[in-house]
Length: 289
Image 1 (cartoon, rainbow, N blue to C red):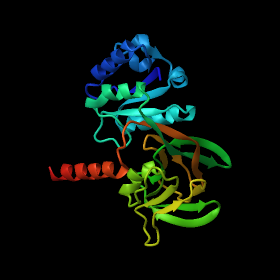
Image 2 (cartoon, rainbow, N blue to C red; image 1 turned 30 degrees about the horizontal axis):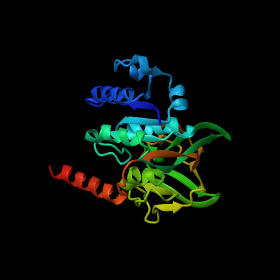
Image 3 (tube, helix red, strand yellow; image 1 turned 60 degrees about the horizontal axis):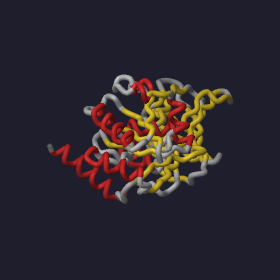
């Protein structure tokens, strides 16, 4: 590995000094560093600035400086190219980021030495059909969520898996989550935890107004179709909580496995359940404070 792309959340405290230190470290070792030109300029690194397209095509690895939100955005941009990603955690905990700030330079040394392994995560693809035409297409890592607006009543979502009717959910919405997304919104809505090495999709109703609605897991190659039956009120489709699209009555949302996986570089064997225990403990500690 010799060419590294950097994806940077400029809103994170201290990120400028950290990035400049990493850039110096790489350049001292003869490596090429690429940064999106709009990000490079405010960091005083315009000489490294390039287009997003060129960065994705040329980088052998993209290093993300931010939290899980920054990593999710970056994943959607680079996953189709097969470019591996590794995250430096500048957020709260970071289920997806791999490197803590004190370990940044030793971690970069491990990357150059090839001391890492690649972990693949399945992604989701969502399409909105309106009058038999595709009017929106999204790809994401965590989840596709159909929700009602702030002042809307319950919405009715007619749901099918591989053409077979499953249920009509009177609810606040419906979450279709990947294994990675099982620790996000789906978990808060009562969905199960799924280890990231499994390939499946979760269907998790949000506050369903029926006793018969329970979270379900379906095969990764399934096609999930949700028909919007509600006539009134705002209904939205969001991907990873970051990309949204307004839905109308009788729109059909089709969700399936994306044609490509996300690739993450891992430097250490941090177990899923170890990380989960740490997050749950921090949540409890935060509530107690």
